Amino acid sequence: MLLMGCDSKLKSTETLPFYNTADFTAEWITPDENRYKTIHTIRSFAMQDQLGHVFTSDSLKGKVYVANFFFTTCPSICPKMVSNLAVLQHLFATSPELELVSFSVMPWVDSVGRLKEYGKSHAVNPAKWHLLTGDREKIYALGRTAYFAEKGQGLLKDSTEFLHTESMLLIDKKARIRGIYNATQPDDITRITDDINILLNESESSYQ
Image (cartoon, one colour):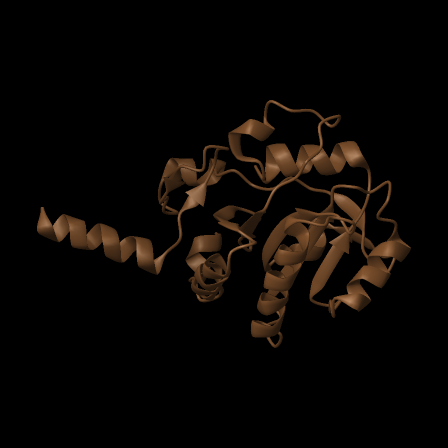
């Protein structure tokens, strides 16, 4: 029993779990298992970034990335999230395999121009950190049913109900969810930093 406990602990520290449902039950699934082929993935999307460029899910192929949802006029949790994400931008500034993606939940306010100015005022590097705007219904559906950003509660809501969450999601090179964290908490920035490094060093067999 003691050995089994040690093996379990070692496994959880060397590899990250997959999250297939909105209740965020951690599942360690290996490539030799049949269910490996049906792991939940983030579906395709197309938005505009702060430079006015079309940014799609294909832009993130082969990348590890952190996703969150925000809006530029948010006076509460968003400034904390942006400040903490800036830490990740700095820590992984020289890592081309790590990117940050922030979806606006007020796209009717957050135009390309507004996102560009917001990015400048918060030292956002548009080559590393993408501020995205687009269709409200598509952003809300993506946030709630693909990223599970509001966990299980989000599945009960539609696009008429405002999406507001402090969650940030860690996505691997095959668009699979590997972690959820509170973007307002410095301790979670430390935790996600460690987990990003695990994903960046994950063996290529994990992406077959």
